Image (tube, rainbow, N blue to C red; front, side, top):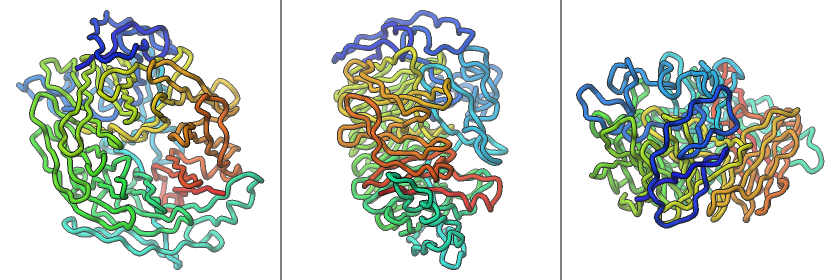
Length: 617
């Protein structure tokens, strides 16, 4: 097992760069943490491990086994009990989970006064997520955590659904089928191509009327047609399979034609959609989580396989609860090859996507996986039983998708917790030290040994968009955006700079062999940009829309430089494109901008909201 770096970092960045080595040496214990400075620094002071995460957006989920121990229980996988709290899993939690206490409490330290209205985005309309404050430290998470009304219920992940109407304008509502039998896809309703008044859809002619030379066309848009709960609903996906774009929301999953936006199929669900992986299998199948009832006490325990090509439901399976501490309210799903994993507090399972058979369950031993990231490899985060709940021990492992057995194990220094997997191949992992509010980003080699530790320049603060996948009892290890990686380079966006007349930011390329920045590319004046993925050896980015400029898809050369636009969205539709929060996909020369949450102050506004736009030449 290996340890994270222990060298003192230079001022700024996220820690000292490490020379690649097969067996990094164990660290020396750090000195007592320095006192908090009175004002927000551009970068944290030197520390034994890298930088500080912003308190308004703590990492998704609890580490491993998650919650304080019951009276008389042995210290184990959970968090320390906050002073004066009642014991047990439903005790008042520190910081963002309850009254201000512990490391995330409001305090006059380097993070300043914290907001009291939740962790969401700035208020836009009644019923929208509450605003969050600016974080401190070198990174800022753009994390949307949706807080419910009577009880603070934190929702998981993102995606989307548009329920079109027929030619007569009659609403097609989801139909709840029996929970013990698969539900088939419904027929595709037609799309209104008239004057823009039929079903709330604005016509292509209307939206393209002000299009300038060189700008892409608005190919199609969708509006929400689902009667949602009072607080709205998160959108899951989108996933593109062949000529179909799929997203899910509330109690349905819908497939659209990428060419014209018409519904190809709709699959009603018997209860709320509550979890979904970031990727589907190579042949277009996916496994989602559905609640086991429609009451507030329902758990996210039903797995449903769906063929995204056809919208047909396949096998269905109930994840069984395994002991008192197996809290099923939140689960994280990940797919690698033909395996889907279910991660949650104190338990994990792996199933074959093709037939639903169980491949592995909770392993024996002192350390238990609690979250996974999928794709070309299956990466697990594990928590180990310790005698000191204040100083947790976690692990990073690559596991065999067919057996769940680890191929290698990397063990960070005690107290550091696995936060997110930013890239599976190459492997780039985010760690946090919650007690000292630090953040570290490590790159690991193919054999699980340390490759480098990323160190940013002191003038840069970085931003990662992990959506609204924060969960109380579980963790979604994958799914962050605003990042890209190739074999030797990792790309991140900086936090928005608001010092000028308009917002702007940069993309920074890090050398994965040294951890040092290679180059920085600035966004156009008064624009911000967000990495999407790699495209032909270049970094594909989304130039986000401003108040008077449409968004655009652009690329940055391997050596850096100014972004080169490949698809410019119309300036005339920037008001519609500028969703409250969205996901962007570029495929087949088309760009798709998808709202990842639908909420409004009344039913009429809710059902008239534009939920997705497609652009092309």
